[in-house]
Amino acid sequence: MPHVVGDLQLISDINRSRIVISTNAGAKKMLRMIYASIALRKTKDVDIERIVSFSAMFNVDNDITGVLAFDGMRIVQILEGPDDVVSDLFGRIAADRRHEGVVELVNQRIDGHTLDRWGMVRRPISDVLLAVERLR
Image (cartoon, rainbow, N blue to C red; front, side, top):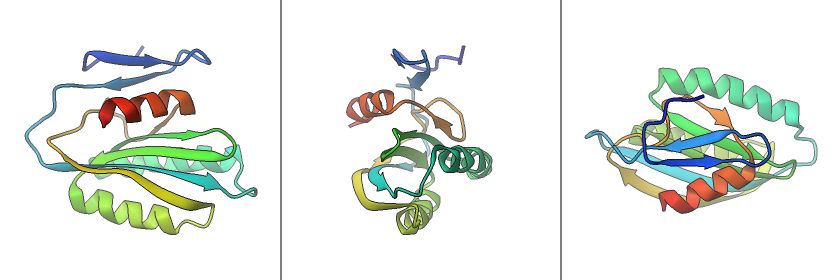
C-alpha cells in the first residue's frame, strides 16, 4: 500500500490501484501539465509499459512526478516538476509519433508536487480523469 501524503485517495474498481494527491505542497515553483491524446493503431500496451518504465527512471532523475493512463486508444497524462524540465518534456511528448491529437488540458504553476513521490506510474483512465478533475 502506498504512503498517503494527502487527504485524497482515488481507488480504481478495476484493480484497486491508487492515485494519491497531496494537499501539502512545498515552496518550490513548479509546473503541472495535463494532456490527452489518441494513440495510433500501431501503439500497443507493451509500448506504453516501456514508456512508463523508461519515464519512471528519467522522471526521478529530473524531479518529475507523473501518472499515465491508456485504455487501448486514449492517453491521459499528468506531469509535475520544474518548469523548464516539464515544458521540454511536453514538447518531446507532443512530437512523439505514437499518438496524435495532443490536447493540453492543464498548464499551471504549482508550489510543489501534489502527486505521490513516484517517477511515473500507470493507472486506469478512470482514476486519472478523476485526479484531473480534482487538480483543476
